[in-house]
Length: 300
Image 1 (cartoon, rainbow, N blue to C red):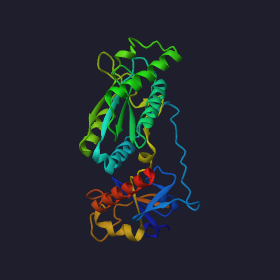
Image 2 (cartoon, rainbow, N blue to C red; image 1 turned 135 degrees about the horizontal axis):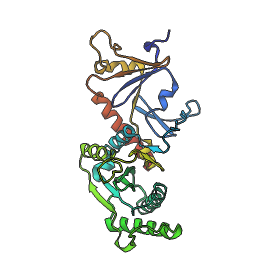
Image 3 (tube, rainbow, N blue to C red; image 1 turned 90 degrees about the vertical axis):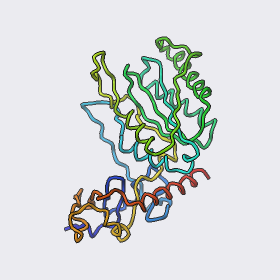
Image 4 (cartoon, helix red, strand yellow; image 1 turned 90 degrees about the horizontal axis):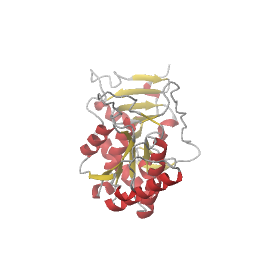
């Protein structure tokens, strides 16, 4: 009978710790296809540890894309703790003419981001989609470079105008010279990041009576995008079993004699345990250090 004591690794996240007996544990916690982290080292992935490919299930009854809010908050927290974010970090909110479709908006957004990358080679960003009250999509981008607000509005106005001409969109009241749909709000602490995102991840289209008339969480385009470094940031600390068990004081339990008392079996290869007090502070610092070192690898 498989036992949690026979597992080889543990994955510490913000909500709990998962014990694994599989090489797949080494590939969790990062969006990077090149690196994984084990104990206190960043290691380049080899052929012996392939990156797992998990087929995403798409709902047949409710079509569209949905925002993974947990992933957004974890990535945003890791982004905030990067050294570059301590110098400058801001949210840029991006509005579009009423009637623009989700697919048109994300197309224009990608053109805008390309212009930003050309302007600032080392720019890092994370963006999410939000549904405005009139049904038109809206984006919020967390960016670690100062951008001239007039210039970024000019870039977006130019991209929207080109789309309007190429596809004959006929946006209501569209005037390129009057466009001022990109706004900026500086971020000064991690709490501000999570509160800002939480506020805008729960909005939807409302009727005149104030009732939501469509699913606010479904979109016809991707709902989340990141630069290469932000996608690769580690959100979980992977430790070998003998190192992970040292943090058993943080496992939720009623008795000091049973560290795995509240372990939940996921399958024969994995168990999950919630925390008593939250993720160990040492591991939070460890994750920040890993991501700081990872940023050097990506920026070198």
